Image (cartoon, rainbow, N blue to C red; front, side, top):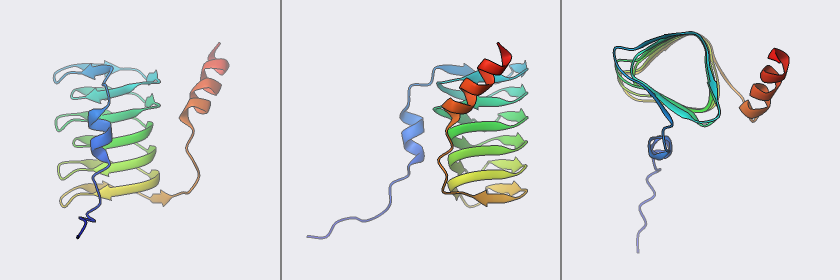
Length: 137
């Protein structure tokens, strides 16, 4: 008779994706990370992160650099700019940098400091990654 019309949390889609790479707590990566899969970061990355499918920053995660992906979930800290299609800042998440996004959600307690620009344009990371690879070759 009555249907539950509560919107579903789309961030669960990324948490159900097969994570191809995990950077564990206590690990520090210095350099850029580029790829087509999804990654979960629980350690520290000093460099830019570009993955086409998604990025999950765990509660202890810290990235010093920019992040580009189709979907990003932030439980930890990002010190840098962010460009994505869907962004979820969880209650423990903090972003210090500019954000370019199609859609976003911030849980109570989540923080961001910087400019937020929302766009209807599809952010096509596969094209950007391919352009970058050809330029480097």
